[in-house]
Image 1 (cartoon, rainbow, N blue to C red):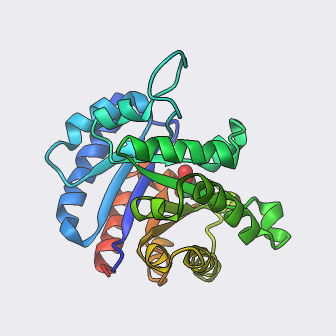
Image 2: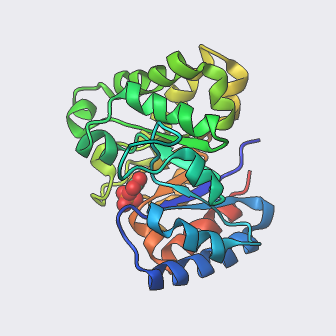
Length: 255
Ligand code: PEP
């Protein structure tokens, strides 16, 4: 049975003070959740050392919001998966739509990031999802398949045995327009069916998170769907009551 995973993505937000307040609260919430749900925070790289110190000894996992494809070298400004791993991260988000969009990251490049993260012992969280124009044109699954296939081609389907997928319709991210549970479940089940065409056991095992204006109000109905295994949460992961409530939802729906 797949566990529900509640993962925050702080994006370009935070101060030393808010990091301290949020991590203390979320570490306590993760401990309270026990084995009933998994909880993680992906933080800006500059705060990861602080997160490591604060989360130590708790059940709260953490990760990076991105990673480079190189282990080391002359790549000014980048953070390598090896560095991220050294600071105790479990996860590395790759292919967030803000990276694909603002930084022009292609699916092939994202696949290389996925591989670099996994090769260095991190669990990649592969973000996929369509724009509003693609949604309106009925191209959601074309986009999702292309973004998944780039990873399957480079890493093989078995790579998803140790990875997480986050389906994040771009039109829902940071807009307050959460996908309905029916729309989200429809896409999640098609993503799983697509993976099944490569390997049924892997498709059955991989956690597929929903992301896009998921909040304390919308999480319960979303998390009840059979193919939604938790959420990747942006804005609501910056607020203690909201994110804690989403963690409690996951605990109450523990599969
Ligand atoms: C995200 O950053 O991945 C995200 C889903 O953001 P939000 O929850 O704010 O829409």
